[in-house]
Amino acid sequence: MIKIENLNIHLGKFNLYDINLNIEENEFFILMGPTGAGKTVLLEAIAGLIPTKSGTIYVRNKNITKLPPEKRGIGIVYQDHSLFPHLTVLDNITYGLHFHKIDKAQAEKRLNRLVKDLNLDHLLKRLPLNLSGGELQRVALARALMVNPSVLLLDEPLSSLDTSFREEIRTGLKRLHKDSNVTFLMVTHDFAEALSLADRAAVMNHGIMEQTGSMEDIFQRPDSTFVADFVGMKNLFAAQFRDTKAIIDNLEIELGRKPANSHGYIAIRPEDIVLSKEKLASSMRNSFKGNVTGVSDKGLYYEVDIMVKNVTFKSSITKSSLFELGIQEGIEVLLSFKSTAIHNF
Amino acid sequence: MRSKETFFWITISCGIVIMAFILIPLVEMMTAPSFAMLKETIKDKDVVRSIWLSIYTAGLAAIISFIFGTPLAYLLARTDFTGKRFVESIIDLPIVIPHPVVGIAILSIAGRNHWIGQIFSDLGIRIMGSVTGIVVVLTFVGLPFYVNAVKNGFESISPRLENVSRSLGASMFSTFFRITFPLAWRSMLIGIIMCSARAISEFGAVVIVAYHPMIAPVMIYERFEAYGLKYSQPVAVWLVSICLILFLALRILTLHNKKEA
Image (cartoon, rainbow over all chains, first blue to last red; front, top):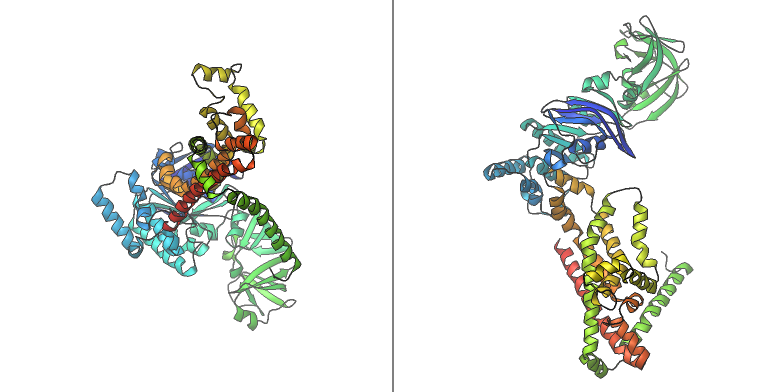
């Protein structure tokens, strides 16, 4: 569907280096990465809004790299909605019809469906100025889908919205995607959003594609230290691998499998590290005594730093277990984790 | 700001001094001529002709600035290129050059011993002492005001609106006329007002290029030289009043439309 080959963009401040990406027809694909990673640049390159230095972009097997944006049939929805302030909601939605030869009856049908699906009926005569964030974003979606694009690019469409609107638009997006044959490519930095919407995703950093794969792969099996850290695998250590063991400094960790490489990294999610006072009677192969060196309140949970020999592990636990175990700085605890919770690369 | 602070009183006093500095001479001049004298002046065909000449040459300068300045302002607002600062300072040059120097500069290419002057003369276009010459000078001094006002106007319109328009199938031309222009026309109107206001007030450059036909500022100067203050004041009052009314009308027009939008 969308196929990007060796794409390079040099725009001074914003650069992309050797981007390769493959998105299937009618897929909901998520693009993640920190601010300044080049996500918006990639979207705008696909839409034809910025010049590329080298590389090729295909949509439906057609090379569109040199096509002007209006000939690509690719819709874009920005975080700030970007509605035309001088046009009513209805004129905004039907703006694209001026430039497309669409049968009148068919256009009407599509308009009615979008207005109904996105609940815009009562807004049609109003100007964007007095609309709420959620309403603005619904109009922007309707406007983009009105011309039936082959691809819809969404640049953090939910991040400017209040939590209540966010849920509403997210469900709306999911339904719109299911009901249409449009391929969705969405930028977000919200993992919950990504997990609930997409099957596959990519992570970018500093203009480089770090990893592409299923959501599960990215969250459970990151293949770089950046992605591991980005998806919240806060326990990330450089390690030597010997047989089925990983050695960090002089700490031996049982992996239960033999890695292919002799040295690399291991990563463990903080929620997979269990704290206890006494040794647990469970199947967890790794259990170490350590000293609590820090406790920090993260709102919904607590993050506890535990030093084992020279290695600091991070574990996240609930408030109640924090009190149950009487965890505070300086005390000794036992930390345990399954070997299957360890990701090595 | 707490009203009892000394600093506050200093700001207020300076404000009052400035207001007085601007208003007292103007009010004095405006109220000096008697009604009968004003009436007599406006019956003078030369006066009417010179005020009309002033207004329409300034208007033409604004229209020329609109036609050529709008694309340039758009370019400056939307693109970043090496030498952009340089281009911007060139556009600002007419603001900082002394007015008689502008006149001399234009004359120096309009003469027959310069190839540009030669081309103009072959085409039968005369710069020296002609309406064309006046328009050239007024455009020269007014253009920067138009370009800067409109550039700011374009900069305040998010390029994302244009991006969205293009992604919906509109060409660059359609996008400009359907999105950018409707959102920027108010700043264009402000640019036109600024440009023509600047052009109407020009004296030093015009007097060198075209003493005749006589624009209003030149006539005011001539009456002052020949007959004294008393005879130059009524012409000045008429020029200022007519210009104020014109600009006010334009402003009201824009404010009115702002409410609608």
